[in-house]
Every structure is written in C-alpha cells, then in structure tokens.
Image (cartoon, rainbow, N blue to C red):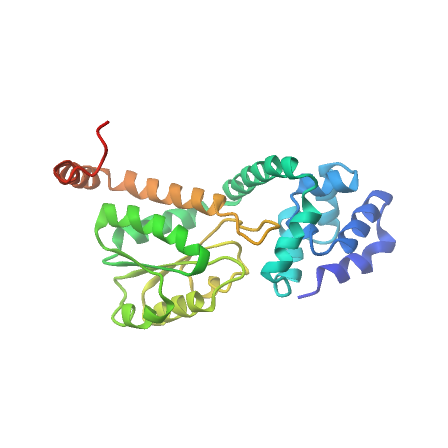
Length: 283
C-alpha cells in the first residue's frame, strides 16, 4: 500500500493553488488531520468542503472518507494513548467550543455510517442472530461497554446470549461451538489481539461470525461472514462509540421487529416476574 503522504508529495507539482494549501496543511499536521471531518479540514485550511472532497478524488481516492481512512492508517500504528490525548489540543481550539464540536462530529459519524451502511450485510446479520442456537459476544477493554449493551437485549429476547469479556476464558467458552452458533466480535482501533484470535477460532470451527468494527481494514474482517462498520475515531485518548451504539440499536430493533410476536409474549411473562420482584420503582 502506497503511503498517502508520499502520494501527496508526488502530486504537488500538478496541484492548483487551493489544493497546494490543503496538501501543505495535511503534511504539516499529519498527526491531527486524520481525525478531522471534511468540514473541520476545510475550515482550518480556508477552502470549501467541496474543494477538500475534490482534493481527495484528485489523489485517487473515492472520496473524503477513503482519504481519511488512509491518513488514519498511516498514524494508527504509531499513536499511543498519550499521543492521542495530546492530539485534542491540536484539533480543538477552546474548551467550550470543543464541547460543541464533539457533539457535531458525533452526529457526522452517525450520518456517515448511515450513508455507507451495507443493507444486505445488515439484513444478513439480523438473520444470523435470529437463526443462531447460541450467541457469543467477544469484546475487550472499552468495547466491553458495547458488548454488555448488546448482550442485555439479545439475551432478554432469546435467552441464549453470553458476553465473553475475560480473554483468558475464551478458549473454554468457545471450545464446543459449532455451525449452529454465532459469534459477534466487537473491536475498534487499537484492535485487541484476543478478539481477533477468538473470531478466527470461531471461523475455523464453522460458526458464523459477525464483525462490528470501524472500517474494512480491521483485523476482524478476514474472519467475518458479515461485517458492519461504524467509525469510532476521535482525537482523544477515548473512542467515540456513538456511531457503533447507534448501529447496535438499529440491529436490536430490527431483530425485535422480525420476531415481534414471540418476543412480545416473552416480555409479557417477564413483566409478571418483574412485578413480583418489584424490579422497577413505582413512585
């Protein structure tokens, strides 16, 4: 894979004045630009968003999204958690302004996910969840938060779901999986090795694998029968799980709609149990 920065440098002589402004800024801010939205980069350089998109196409990419992914790949292998934290000072100007920029960027991540969603893959994921005898969710580190949410609702509906959050217990939990089971792997950059190894093992055992990750370059993709992507990158030591959570919400809702009658009866029975044990406050 040709480095994106080398492509920019080689094409400099062919660029227009506006394109050279973008190129110079990208090359001078290689650690922070990969996390800019198209609007943010346009604002920082002083050009229109359309000019930024045309710049990406000029370099040979399908659009800004692919260009941004290539920029991120160039720095992912180098950025530590501390370095990502330091990026926030480069990307966000003032503290109060940064708050609203984060809200806007999260909304843009959801919008981008919706526009790029592969509906065929989404429906395959729904079918795989409905047809599975057992469902195992593999998630580590911060992705456990998403795994816990997904486990709660799938197990509420089907009573066949388990989140494997302890990497040392994966081998015992997955030892007897077969083609009737489903494994859902959740991992985002910087990807955890245990999650990749678990979905690889599941694939070898004949189980169906759904990968919920950030892009098609994720190490989970080669082992997945179905891949669903949602961006999680942001210039901070944390990941933004707003878009992945929105994707999971849509997935759970779609499964619920497909199995509405069975789930409705199941939930009515649960309501009686919740009432007896006074699960919810009545005040």
